[in-house]
Image (cartoon, rainbow, N blue to C red):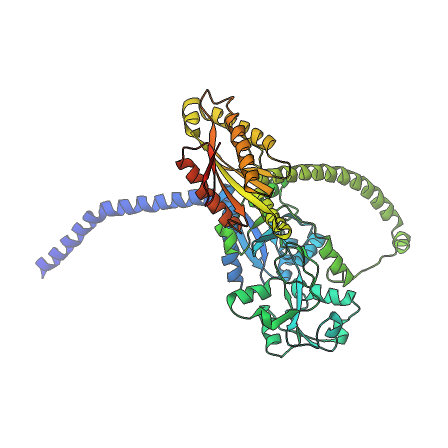
Length: 541
């Protein structure tokens, strides 16, 4: 027993000696983790977190899933700043803004007017959507019934009918339609039966189709979206008092109003607000973050007075409780404080006016610069892809209505790489600027030349009457490129051009560019300095 006990005691002593180095290592590891934690905390403290309140009508987790990628896009392009999506209801917005807990807000136009009026938020950018091949940054309201309801043809026929809407506070799915009826002399509260079914707006559509209600109100685009999903057949519905708008891809009954804006709280520095606006304006169209939130890109902010006018007409919050104050009563009771207050106010207003004027001038200048940056190439000053895409969409619509032809011409420079390699990138930039100036001087005033990227240019030629006209234009273009050799160090400058013509060759922007690209490569194969019409024989310079 003594021996066994001694053996056990010796074993324990041996274990303690053997584990001593491990304990030392563990202590150092603990110390390192504490230091690392302090460093991480210090790093985190240096990171500025910007909270972006976003109106959430449904599950807030869905709002975060849709919009956090846009926040991550902003964070990736503004080092040291992390943007966080915070889904909110309107009451939560008001509490958070009053406590200065939000830096930016993203909401529908009606909510924006409330926050602008009460808290002084200022808009930075407006959402742009792309639907049915058209780019839109406005929306409207739709009034519809079943196509077999011959008793409902005009607004006046809404009297006595059961009307399905989402909610009384919904701007696009109730207020716009209510306002339209009111201006036509119809008081829906007294002369119809309103039924509010809640979100989603699909509920209103299905209620009308099932015959539970006679008429439905939804936002523009909802009917087309449900038809694409296979939920409904548009032929089973009819729009009441349709008001089609030029270049607007949806059925609509009301006027058009600006899309959701992103706005900055008053405490956000103007430099930060401008940087956020510039970053959103420079977001590539159909960026994954934009696709995630179902928008196309951003534009400079629109004006929202139309929205404010509708709210004022119907005395909606914050215009619902006018409280007139008698100036005579105030002066009678508070004569001396009022006099002092007026003097201070006059001085304060003068200072505020001067400061506001300075800020407005700076803001207008910044917006002009941002718009220029968002739509023009920095090196050549030519339109960039964003502006070219807008012009092509408009040109296609005009050509389609007039029965005219237009051409998309993709020009790639031949042998441009040797200029960069032998003479340097400065010489290459000078050559590109010369080419841009010569091309701009060569094309007609109504046509467009844009820089596509690198050493590629795109020409949009309108009003084409025959192939000989486009051949002659391309010969002038090739000659203009060849003249751009002032900075090429004796190296020849030429181009390979691919041409795709609407509507004979293609009808959509994507197909036009695809065909022009294929024709351009055919021109390359032929040795360059020529143009090729898609699906036709090449034409030399």
